[in-house]
Amino acid sequence: MSDDELVEKIKDGDEAAAKELIDRYYGAILRYCGWHCAAPEKAEDLTQETFLKLFRSLPKYRGRNQFKAYLYTIANRLCIDESRKMSFYSLEDAESIADRQNEIVQAEHREDIRRLLTVLSEEQREAVILRFGQELGFSEIAKVMGCSMRTAQSRVRNGLKLMKKEFGDEW
Image (cartoon, rainbow, N blue to C red; front, side, top):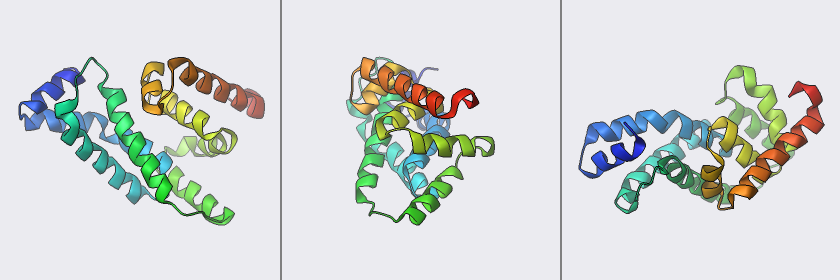
């Protein structure tokens, strides 16, 4: 069943459809929020808040097979709001935060991800995470990031070029 079909069932009060939608996306949204949070507990809170906002806003959602971008846009805005609340940290604190964020990610990718975070600009990092970590298409990335599709493509392409330049054949 498509995401939009599930949404229509949820609008009609089907709780099983809501559970299925949560089951389908909860892990991915948790990982996404984990990229933006200092603590796994905060990522969990933002994930839950994402779904709460989603269900509150569903009466306004009009479908058109863009649910995934809609959901990630909600998560993205919550993560941005949360990052604005964070105070500045010392370098040691920043390294500690990066270490805690990496606990969310699969063990074999930790070192690669740490290097990725240090090399890319914020926009490039976000675009690469959405493209490869969350498997969003360029039009979905553009919607989430509030840019054109060409800009989304450019951010991913430039991020990959920068990683290749920095790390050579390791990537």
